[in-house]
Length: 236
Image (cartoon, rainbow, N blue to C red; front, side, top):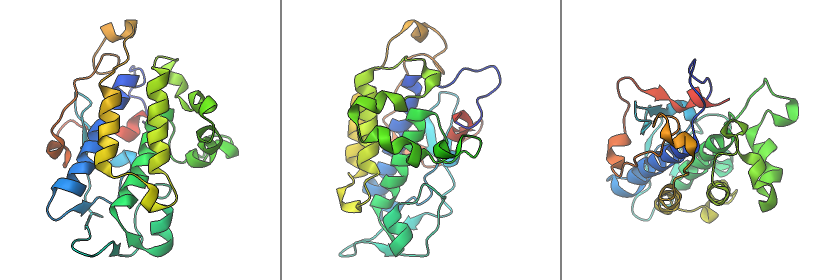
């Protein structure tokens, strides 16, 4: 999402949803299937690799931590991660939980919706921080459409956009106990993915404008792969 490859159009709506679903399922696997559970701790666009079919893969597990087990509710650790993606409760307390990953995913989802980076010094000062710029629009459902990446040129289903914005809002709640669990986020995103946007552009290249084929195998997204691109390459 950072630098569109030369000669290629921006990611279309269906591909963005496909990426969101894949990342959510990957995190859900780490949180709910892996034994012991894993907290990724470094969710950001630069760590999401895309293969030739634009299926996402989580990469760089250098900051990952084994999650709390038994009666433990959190893992106490030195605050590490990437500016803008870290949950505020984790930054303040150093208490790492699964909900820390969910906040970071909310930021990533907002990047996919808007086509903006979490921080972009090239923009006017009021727009440099994605979270600061987007907040007024996220507080008013009538303004959700203003969050859509202009590069989409309106080629997205408004109801699906609203659903993605709501999911992002839920993930970005300041209080961790209010944020959803990753499995529920994946279910919500799969619901959106089950209603792909159809347009004349869908007759073009499936990598950019066609309806994607959704993978249901999150365990395959835990590592990188040859020929992969990073999600951050597609932010404007």
